[in-house]
Length: 177
Image (tube, rainbow, N blue to C red; front, side, top):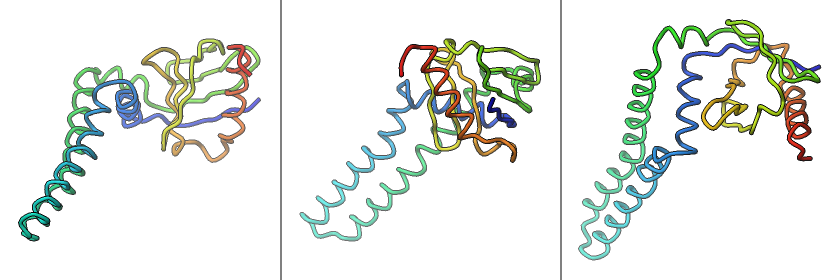
């Protein structure tokens, strides 16, 4: 049976909360607005100014402002979001969940070995699987998931074999093929 071993860090917990918020709340819409829409409006204003008044220097200043806006405001929002999450999670709770994890695909379910012990997770408990750039999330509820940081996998872990085994088992358990 395929298995993986990885280390879960504090940043992985923050990134799960950010990923989940981007996908399911106003936070994601706010980030999109400040990365694309508002800078796009400023770019249109810059083009209008350049075309109607031929003040190229003013147009260039506005283009630079739009570029800076699209980088700085989302970074500031992300920093504030991480601060908010850290305020909501007690440090001792974070320390309990970070550390080395092992996940093994079995017939009965997913066997998780964590710093707090072993647990067998029934396949029907995993409601969806999502992947981001650096993580794979096995959702156990609407806002809770097993977070797998793919960059922190041990060298002997075969993630592709593990992932395929999990997807097959979850589909079988949920009756979707």
